[in-house]
Image 1 (cartoon, rainbow over the protein chains, first blue to last red):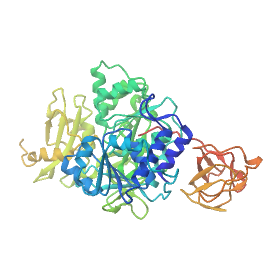
Image 2: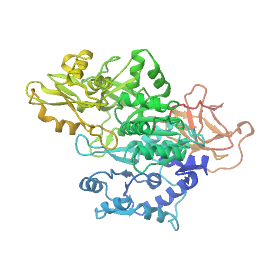
Image 3: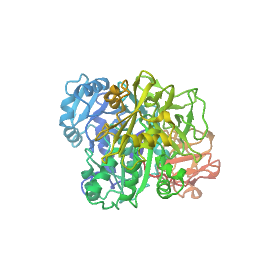
Length: 505
Length: 101
């Protein structure tokens, strides 16, 4: 198996349909295939090297991804938003290789030993014209070879490189996407950056489905809305912060609903319920999909589909409404198990760590090797539970668990309660050091309308055990998120650590 | 007879059909166009599919036997149609998962 098998099928089946870009000027599947071959011929001049990308979304992304697969080299997209020193550290770990970037990306990687930096323009120019010859279809079909290396975001330590082999990504696509399943008029807007796992999987699933890719170089809610309208976009994937900003922008424009978007999937972090409920009103005929997945699982492993969303939006049943906060059910071919601290499976509704197994699950890092157990299960480090209908509820990273007086509590359950107050736009619960309790709970709240702290404390006390009541409630204009929508709890814990030993605050 | 396992690839020897095994294990009598299929890249294509095995294989479709013990994905289309153990393979029902990325 090789990622190129997917593109070759698309090139054979779809030929002159546009794969990437605008209808009048984009690359067709046939052209994308040819350009990948030319890129591969170039890449092969440096055997044993990697294909490093330090760039925003552009047609160079799929060409580099498939070209690397054809050449038999790992594709390594870097986070160009990192500060220079951090970026160079990752680039040094990725050498030797070819590094492709925009002018600034190429310049920032210049001088890294073993990396040949080329600008995106050079990369594209080098491909047109006298590219070295390459045999059609001569990629390796060894499914064990590394297709993609993705650095984890390093929210809890130094970034690690997650290893995705051809077998993981191809299994994911074959297991979840129907070949040529998209109509000729369909287009998807990719606004996640190339170094996010969804930036990789979006290329693969769209190419295999035959859905035209429209790329947004960098996310801006107004540009997103305008591009969707101008390009006739029918499908989109966004992280929660993006959807929140799109909803704000649409409301600022007068709240006109967007009717052209047929399907909108979201994932990559916890979606505040008020945001999704407002979005359901602003996209009234859109099919919503909540996807849960990790870099180490080749993207999506569970999803909450359109029908589930409608039921949850309009149901009077508390359990069915609650499913809007769930990640839905596992994909076919993916097994999910909730385990306690001794790795025993727990019962329905009981909280534990989410374990996952399936052909798309890698669970491997270059630095640490495979984390799969002897039966193939990967511990996600996410906490959660499964309800009686088989719906998976994800409650956040186990590393974020608050331990107060020996009692483990998930920030998510406290945040969910806080967000039921209509005045609360966003909420984070964190633990800060406390001499008496070990940790004390601080609630960090975004509430444009004033909202007394005591009312929020009473709300948590009424809905959850008293031990869950935040000792402190602080109000801020916004919570810190990274650019792919992950809440930076570490930053909050640092900012509010001083509250910990001062219970009179 | 060929050895089936997920990820293994086979080609027809009488048409352009190529497949990858999605599901299946062990030895199987895998035919296309009335001739035995061979591991991809190991055989020449010559002749034509037999008249009773020439309904064609479609690119990107999944083919399975009645018991659904075998599932093959066509990575290249061809004029021959496939059979396992003498029983023709049929196009499997398309998956209808919504797009998630």
